[in-house]
Length: 280
Image (cartoon, rainbow, N blue to C red; front, side, top):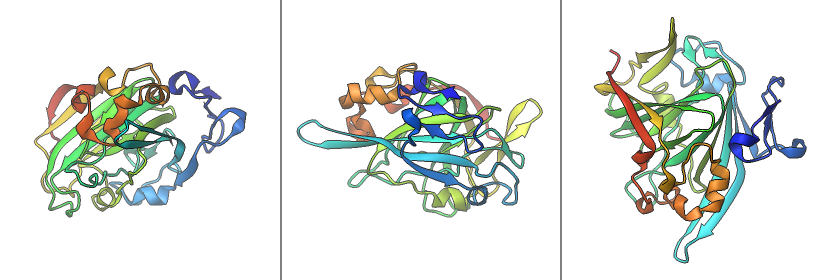
């Protein structure tokens, strides 16, 4: 049994001996609404649609908790979720999520941002911005792609207008949580039609290797690597569980519902560590 309380701030445990990697609250209660992502569903978004891999592929607990606050003018509503990815491969790809984009906020020109925290294991987040998420893959232009690595206790900012995928590149279960606007709904269609991001994370001789997804006709020139940075103005400080931080200072987290009111540039939570040529 893996104790997730030190990183989550909640009485959570992960049953590593359970084939379904069940996450439980105290008293064996199930947190939130469990969504089981079958391998057959994930295959729609893989490089190889016939790939073998873990089945189920991963688990999502949506609506573990909700929180609302008002500043007297507007009300913010947040939702807290959990995701569990087992270790494994799908063909020669490291196990990852289907991936999704965030729709635009009504009345605004940007989509919702999202804040993640790694509770156990190590995560590789693929962040991808395209000129038109609604276009066919061979018609959209990829403007930027960032590979953001985060370890247990670290927090990851996913800026507005970036589709994203979570990859487990280790041999341990990966458990992550997120705060997101309760009004948000994932748009999986572009990720499925393109069969994943523009850059696949595959198994190499010395760890992950990166391979171009040929379905994108206009990939970026560069592949940017990044790590999380503490951003106290945004409520993000490694080692301080996000669950408690949002409840303690809800005003600092309003940007998840309205990026225009962020107390700092959302990219202040991300440090680019190097830039490589995009794999051809």
